[in-house]
Length: 292
Image (cartoon, rainbow, N blue to C red; front, side, top):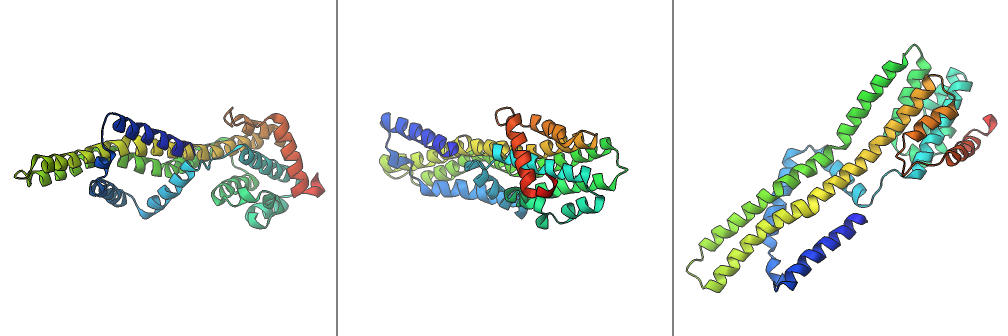
C-alpha cells in the first residue's frame, strides 16, 4: 500500500509541477515512445532470466506491493510449532516423533498451524533438521554449518527477482535514449516541414529520455528495493528456526530454546515473552491435549 501511495505522490508532484510551469500534459502522452522503452525492457528481462525467475519475479512484486511479509502472528506460529515439536522430540520415542516429521500434512501438531503448514519450504526445512536430530550421531556444529549453507542458498534464490529488477532498472535510462534517438531520426526526416511540426517531433523524442529515467529511478528501483526488503524478511524466518533448533540440540529446554528464537526476531516486530508463553501453552493444548 505504501508503494502505491508513494507512486501517487511522485506522479502528482512531477505532473503537477510540470503543469504549474506552463507545460501541457498532453505533450507527455507519447504512447509509442513508451512501447519502445517498456517493450525493450520486457524483452531483455525475458532474455536474461529463466522462466522460473520470471514467474517468481511476478510473485515477488505482488508480495512487495501488498506487503505480504511475515508479521508478529507468523512468528508466534513458528515458535509455537517449534515448541510442540521439541517437546515431542524430548519426551516421546523416536518412532512417535518421527511419524509427525515424515508426514507433516497428516500430523495434528502441524495441522494446528494451517497457514504455516501451507508454506512447504519452511515445513521441509524444519522437518529435515528434526530428522537429523532423531538420527543422532551428528555434531551440532556440523548441523549449524549445514544450516548456514542452506540458508545462504535460500537467500540467493529468494533475491533473484530483486537482482533481475535491478538490472532492468539500470538499463532503462539507456533504453530511453534509444527511444529518443529513434524519435530524432524521425524528426530528421521532417526537416522540410514547418517549425511547429518539427518542434513537436523533437519534443516527442525527448519524452523517451524522460520516460526511461523516470521509470528507472521513480518506479523500478524503489520496487526492486521493496522486493529485497520483503524477501529478506522471508529469509529471516529461517534464521529464527535455526537459532531455536540449535539451542535445543545443544541441550536447552524447549521453552529456553524458544527464547533464543524470539530474540532473533527484529525488535520492532518481536512478540513479548508473555505472548510467546501464552501461544506455546495454548498451541500445545490444542495440538496435543494428552501431553499438556
